[in-house]
Image (cartoon, rainbow, N blue to C red; front, side, top):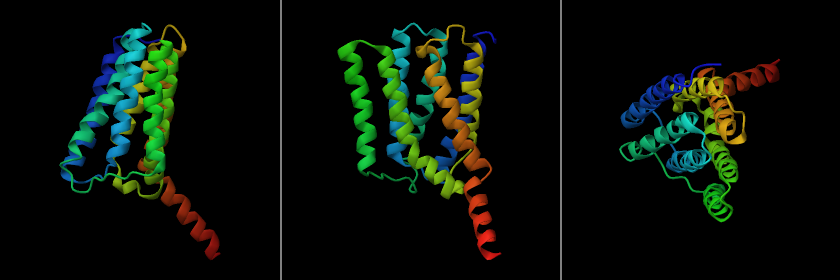
Amino acid sequence: MLNEKFIILGALLSFYGGLSYLIDTIKGKTKPNRITWFLWALAPAIAFVAELEKGVGMTSLMTFMVGFNPLLIFLASFINKKSYWKLNKMDYVYGAISLFAIIIWKLTNNGNLAIFFAILSDAFASIPTVIKSYREPETENSKIFFFGLINASITLLTIKVWSFAHFAFPIYIFIICALIYSLVKFKLGTVLKNRKKANLSV
């Protein structure tokens, strides 16, 4: 088990990864969907405040950074002409889940429910980026997801109290960052497509 102070290192690494994506967004190298990045900022913000109320402590720093980086990228996307608003029916569902999380939290005063719905909202909001990372990995930057994965790993290794409020968001971030990083870095979608083409041509 790592000392809690390592969480600060994880947060700094996460910020570094986010900075790389932020620069690429400003330069126009990435094509962020503003809806996705806005929801990626909103859902962790809900979870972060709920974690504070549940007394999670320093572990919540990871959750804060998970929302802070997307907020910066969302704001930077307005400089990037390739960025876009892509609203479909599911985007309204993702937004409704986030809103529902806040309402349930305030009505029940149950931080765990807020964290659960925040994770649900974040996961649904991730679907377009997962699909894009599979189909067009060159339009994404793997660094932010790699360092997000490292941040989540460090945080999980520092947890002393394994309650839902402490481990739920870090585990979720570990899984989603590992998935998107793998799709972007190793271009798994392209590899699978090429294998299918090769099999069909045989």
